[in-house]
Image (cartoon, rainbow, N blue to C red; front, side):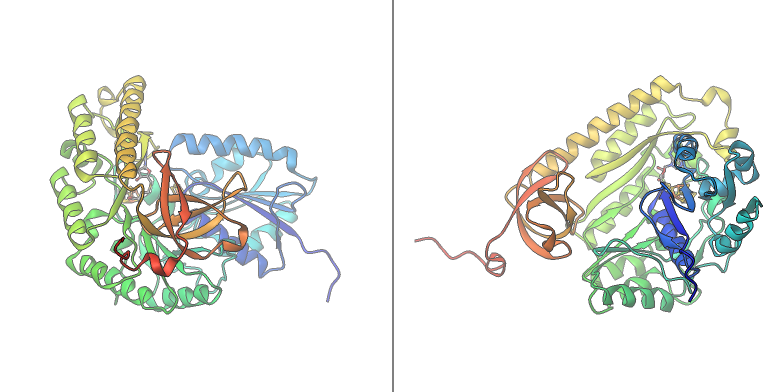
Amino acid sequence: MSNAPRPTVYIETYGCQMNVADSELMYGTLAAQGYDAVESPDGADVILVNTCAIRDHAEQRVIGRLGELRRHMKADTIVGVTGCMAQRLGPRLLEKARHVSLVVGPDGYRALPQLLDGARNGERGIFTTFDLEEHYEDVTPRRTDPVKAWIPVQRGCDYRCTYCIVPHTRGPERSRKLDDVVREVRQVVETGTTEIVLLGQTVNSYNDGTHDFADLLRAVGAVDGVRRLRYTSPHPNDFTPRVIAAHAEVGAVCEHMHLPMQSGSTRVLKRMLRRYTREEFLACVATLRTVMPSLVLTTDIIVGFPGETDEDFEETVSAVVEAGFSDAFTFKFSPREGTPATRLPAEDTVPDDVAGERLQRLIQVVRAQSREQNLALLGTRTEVLIERLARDGELLMGRTRDWKTVLVPGDASLVNTYHMVELTGTTGSTFTGAFVKDERASRQPLPMAG
Ligand code: SAH
Ligand code: SF4
Ligand code: F3S
């Protein structure tokens, strides 16, 4: 064996869970080539920044961070940019940042060891071709979360929402083979993880040529040891009757869903090319609630899309109420170069101050609704999976099946265990709770007093 020290790699991740999963794959690829993962950029031999291109703000953050990282570099540190911004900007990134020597898009991570070797010889490398076969099946991801496993089942996107850069940065949609997903789930469960989150841009359109998303839910739900099954993000149009029926059959599927609405106005939805009307979206919600009566729904909403009028915006507000969302990620429209929305007439542009006011109003509506729903839950008992120590270090942070955050007293030994908890307080968004003393008894009807 050689005594040469193993090179170290630090990866900083931005953007969505797909990027988090991809960073785990990059660490895995590099570990197989003799690299050690480190938790800080200081002194690392390789620094990779795994980026997001979804809004301009996300990109500006990365540009700023790339500048800062100079201060953490040794003379021979290699800096690479990966992910969606790398795919989008390609060679332009190398021009923008002289200290960056590799630019690698989401389908190129297999080439990382080779590109790093090149960079050591002073070469600057770019890999931004899409590979429709690439699922990194032979790479063992480096997982750091013992509680939850994020498992990509689909890469890319075949929708063409007019505001969205993802089809440009992630390429065409493709699904992993069901057997490969199930194999990975089995491996994960063997390590003691019981919560699985299936990932895809429109995850319920999953189709591996033989199996659809209904088959996938059933197959993953049937793996011994899977206790909680989630997925993100579904598209309303991909809820076929088969997929909906599977929800009633697979007990592990949790009673929370993140279902992006984007707008409550049919006129705006049409211009966004979301391919559903307000009524169709609300009908989808109603159907899902029929199959899962206790379903908690969260969503994504864009305000200030070109041409959005006050009336359109009011329709979004009323749809939030009608759909009964418990929370929402709300965004101001951000024009993305090359997307169809940038070709809408200039006079349709919603002034920034108007978009800002709508955003604030929407956030207030969402918060009030969430608060009202959460207050109604006080005093109820629910199953909590402990995820980690809370930020203050004195409490534990756990989650209910329906994705509520609960803080309970306890120590780190309880991480990755399930408990019955009574919800005792709420900030409006998160809860405090107390363990129910006799957990088995708590599931039995209470004896009559007297
Ligand atoms: N594939 C997912 C969305 C992934 S992007 C889906 O279709 O549901 C996450 C969210 O970012 C989107 O749901 C949308 O609300 C927001 N988003 C995407 N492009 C945006 C843009 N150009 N400006 C503002 N928000 C955007
Ligand atoms: Fe973007 Fe639409 Fe695809 Fe989601 S479905 S990733 S919003 S193009
Ligand atoms: Fe961002 Fe790419 Fe995800 S653009 S949201 S990291 S798919």
